[in-house]
Figure 1: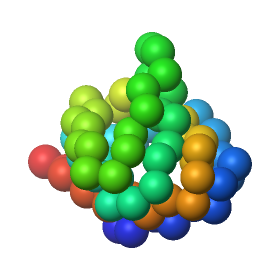
Figure 2: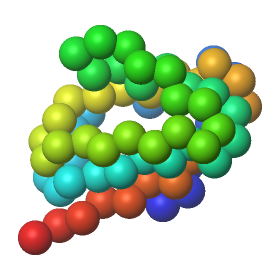
Figure 3: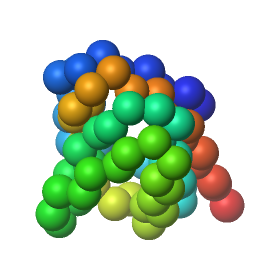
Figure 4: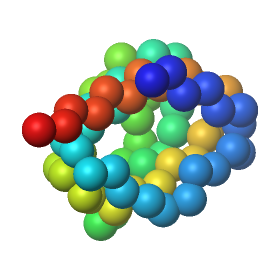
Length: 70
């Protein structure tokens, strides 16, 4: 799934039932887990199954989300 966010857009806290990877294609986002992590273009992150998280775009951004189900 490609996610496109404009600066200051937010995706509120949620989780998914599968394992997920998130690749920042362009821009920068703040990903909130137990702590806040900044993803810049080229950064990649793995999310465990059911891991609660939220996103906030620091600047106009594009992300590639992959969810893997059993």
